[in-house]
Image 1 (tube, rainbow, N blue to C red):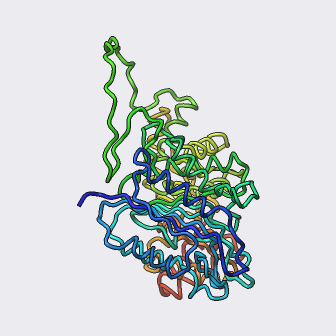
Image 2 (image 1 turned 180 degrees about the vertical axis):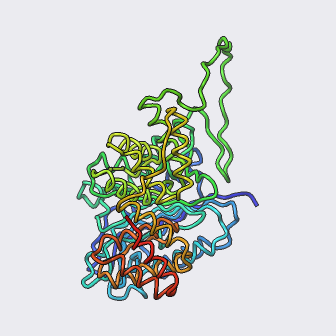
Image 3 (image 1 turned 30 degrees about the horizontal axis):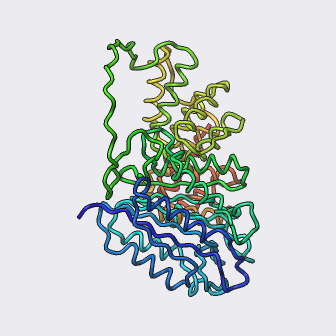
Length: 480
């Protein structure tokens, strides 16, 4: 069976419950997005819109959409509606008949959506969410006001692109005329980027999820809207949403034929030229050459491939440098360059950067980068980090915890974080994605609280036993 391209557009702007304000843009969003996705020169999708329908029809459409798909199909689901959290912080998508007091029985839960995505055979699923996450308006809501969509909806073979990840309003257009509503800012940018081809950021003729995210992010930022789109992706292959109409050559997309090409005019080939030799490594020991090497190496680190981890990495580096390290979180290489530049412009900054790399990737990765830097600059180097102070303690405790049985799986790390949070009386936030990242968050939370390191030992004593706790205490006693 050949690969197919299918899109389901859920749009809800009219609500029976007066507590849910009417949205002007969802119907227009669905219409505009359907046009560009259906266009064989752009998206080539088979599109089904579901507009202003009750929750049971929305749920049925979602379940049917993910049912009986081929492994190589590309599925795109767009939801434009109110997003609501219940008192336990669980996310729901509002339908036309949703009652905010009865979310479990009148709305579509993120849990239901996740289950359908997990059961689907298709390897490639793109989820676009244009919702205002109104958890802050629920009196007595537990936990923070963020919607942890990566934990709830992300996963292997999926890309999730959202208008916002917090309680910011997902802005609609500026017009107030309900007879001629503008699209929402988020979906409007998606439509514009696909229709114009401007979302083809690298000019390769194809618009991937990463291309689309970077374009939408820049569009909303330029518009001055106080919402920051988010992207999470864990896929086997690049997810191509559309062709670029501005590309000189049209690329084939899975499930639809390539557009025919015009015959190229007969032009004599240019005279051959000999390109200058390209060195394998920047040789001169100057700041730019070293910056190029360091930015490239940072861009190859697994921990920095994820936007949220890059942000946490920047926070820890900023603490070591004594200054803020500001990342946009849009492009990996841009963020890697900013991290490298921040380290280079601070006294002892490269040593601090290598320590943070050791923290998130381990000593072997830090040593490898240090050696590459030495080869690039011709300098002799010492050991990473200097081995003293609070950073050394953070490194030692992180290494020790990473070996414990209690943290080897995401649920175990959540248990450690929850128990530690109860003892400290403050939130310990772990994402459950990577072992070292979660352990760093746990150890940092402990070290930031008065007596927190002893609380951490007690938690380990409960979950891993006396022997492991004693080893942790020994490390604390021998810390500089």
